[in-house]
Image 1 (spheres, rainbow, N blue to C red):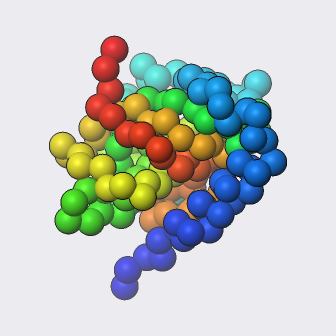
Image 2 (image 1 turned 135 degrees about the vertical axis):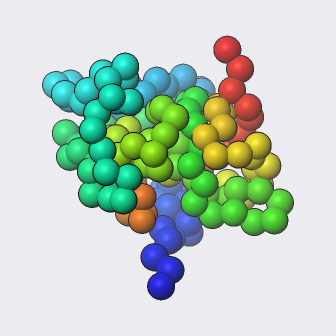
Length: 168
């Protein structure tokens, strides 16, 4: 049985509502880091400890820690974020939906981070990925959107206008 996939149309419709509500904010690109998505007081483990935490690879989603909340500061804004690709929907020409994760292995080899550290990315133009966990920078409209996948609960969505390989 194939697990239900998030409805891309619903995510895009939700994000378009933000665009109509904040047209002046859409002209500025906001560079976000993963810490920008965490509310004050979030007690997720530091990045350097994530790889040493014990985990059971047969139940990754079950090991997802509870999110301490999401931030709405950038709803409807155009943002640029970097992270790693975990494909969700693929066509012959590339990936059209993926989870943007903050570190390699998230959602696949180690339990997923909290929902406030995951971004569901959709794109009309398939992105030709070089493989699982490719580092990318994504620019597009950002918003809060609770999305559930087989791999994890996700707190944010980004409708990508541009996806490019990550460069320092």
